[in-house]
Image (cartoon, rainbow, N blue to C red; front, side, top):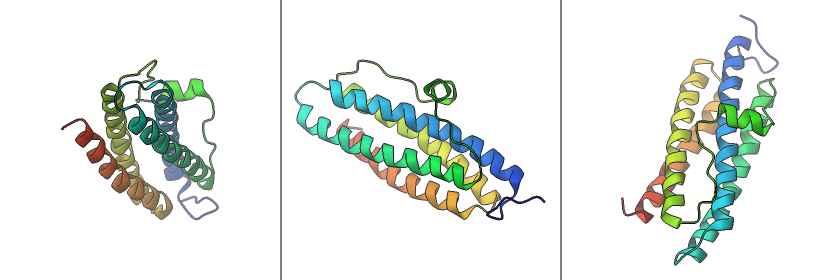
Length: 157
C-alpha cells in the first residue's frame, strides 16, 4: 500500500478527494442560491428570512473553505471554477426566487442532498482510516440535521 504524506492510502484519498470536490460543488451552488434568496426575498417574513439566509450563507462559506482545505490536506486540488461546480453539483441552480416558503423548501431539499453526500463520505473516510474527514462530516451532519428540522418547522412540516 502506497501512502501519502499524512499516512493515508493514496488510492483511497484520491477517491475521497473526488467525492469531496463533488461536495464542494454542491456547497458552492447552494451558497449562491442562498445569496440570491437573501437578496431577493419579499413579503411578510422579509426581515426574519433576510437575516436567517445571511446566517446560512455565512455558515456555508465557512464550510466551503473547510472542505477545500480538507481536499488540500489529502494532497489534492479543490475545484475552483463555477463551470465545474455546475457540472458536479446535484443541488440545482435557483434563479430569481423571492417567495420565502419556496426558498425554504429549496433549502431543505439542498440540505437533504448535502447530508446524503456527507453520509457517503463518512463511510468512505471511515474505510480509509481518515479521521479528519470523518470528524468533519460527522460535525456537518449533526448540525445540519437540526437545521433541517428548524426549516421544516417553519414550513409547518
